Image (cartoon, chains in turn brown, cyan):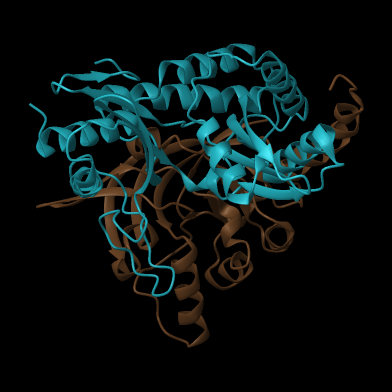
Length: 199
Length: 292
């Protein structure tokens, strides 16, 4: 289990060195997207429309931040990860078409994403769910916001972060999924738990 | 003197308290979980959680960006003034709190997908009333994040299933939910009544302080056993393995129909936000959860 610092742009050779259980700290630009934004991004791609923001090897952060608008712009107040599984249906296309190599979220993702991460060379890192004040400390600047018509939590926020972490790699580019492993072990423990006749 | 302005102030304060500082019993349980955790990834998560709680308190910032779907549980003395105006006062306070604290706007029309931007919508905030004897108003603010809310489950079991099946249902939901409800969680279980009653009871179970034992010894034992069993799954903090999956399991029950055995499971993330205050007949305010 190693700890490394990552910067934009994220290259495949760096991603391929990561294994489940490793910890990373990320510095650079990232963009947030939740359900509605994913849907719109893919509609844009399908219709051959240009996205109003550039990705350039930036990580995708599953997050709907709590923000405040001031006279000088936007301030991020709390920005922890949201449940990634809701985006499971979209990430194959996001990784293939946009070249996303690092997805940050919480709660893990499904088999479809694990498969494409292995094929393309991408990983899933998690920040502690709910630790949103701490996460916002790493946000140095709001670079851009797009699609505010989707509502503040669903908009695309382009953020500059510094040493954002610890991000624990839970899905690596070799098909390993730490969530699935823990759940499989829990299934094994279940038989023993239910044997307990104390009730 | 009690005025609408005073009640509005109390509601805004309760929302602020609830989203920026956890009740002492929850903090104690999380610290205990951190001290007991042997899994290094689980321990890292618990450390980050504790740091986050401290920073949220210090800076009076919402601990989680998901400031939740907002519910209020009210207990009112029947003699308390202008009870019919209180729901409007609460809605006004929520609108104000959304701007001032701020809270994330989380009320979306399910047909148009439009966010109302002020946390006010149809049946939102949810307000639950209990009218009692006397002249007072007890308000509990209960903003609940949706990572855990999305894992809530209901099963209409058959009467022959019994408590062993209740346990299996809970364990299955815990394993299936994995890291999604942000463990370590608090698990509320509602047994009996009808479908709505079971889920309402499961939710109300989440409002009980963790350090208060169930006065019914049978149920206290059942709660302890369920909690131990949930923790034996090894799902752990954030679903990445470890010793603490749940901080507590709390059970509420209602009598059931002879042909029915409803069981509801409500998950509460570690950010178990609640704050209560009582306003007496003279307008004296007592903040119970966070006596600041």
